[in-house]
Image (cartoon, rainbow, N blue to C red; front, side, top):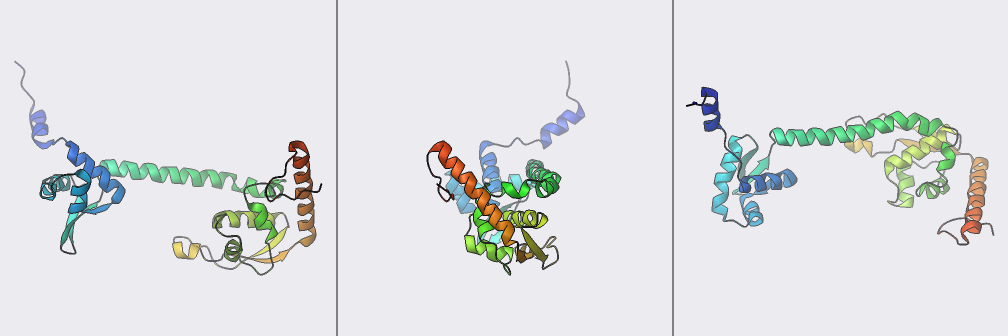
Length: 226
């Protein structure tokens, strides 16, 4: 007759399997991060008086903390192994995207036809047509609305600067970890090469005319010489 080891006996006493309600609470708090007892009770369709025992069990596992706010009990998610793994995965994905951008950014700026891709990519043509001496990239974005994110406006300006379509002045230091400063103006357009811009307009017009001839229809916002 086999007997359980001391380690197995201790494990049986320590391990408390998470029940369905506990699991649902975890899922809610992973999304909301913080919730009143009543909010949890309403979402789980159980009596508020039953929430406490589930919270205490999860608190023992160091997954959450509870405290009073406006004389009501609040639960705040602080993590645990599962949460840490999820946060690490999210961080990895974000850094992977940033790394891919960093690897390609020099090529995107310096490759010979980078400036011409702007003619037909997304809404960048509208941006190019609004290039004006004295404008910052933030003011430029305000002119065209929310169609193009600020980081894309900066990328287009840097590409155009590298290829001589505009001349930029950098007007502040890097924001680093200051998120508010990140959205403050970084560049000011000192000069627009109007002759170069006219060539760009001509190239786009010819391309639009060719597209019109091939498809026998006109695309919205295109410049067609027909």
